[in-house]
Length: 78
Image 1 (cartoon, rainbow, N blue to C red):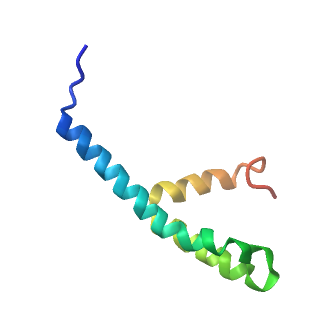
Image 2: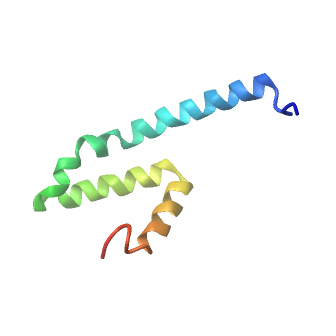
Image 3: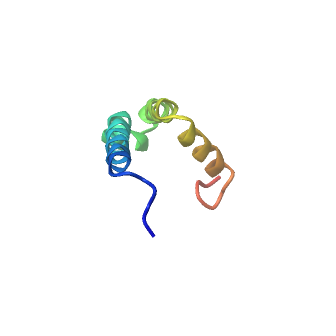
């Protein structure tokens, strides 16, 4: 059975997903690069603030995902 999606809509979907991927990489790159700061008491708060701001900038889906994970002690911890 043939798909109802046209080639154009498939290509457009791939382009949109690729752009979103690179947008998220740009948002989270500072968090990944500064990850070692998380292990020092003096810079842990700075890193956490940067992480929270990145999650806020990334969109509603990420916020909801982290809200869900915050209730799962087996995933996040106490």
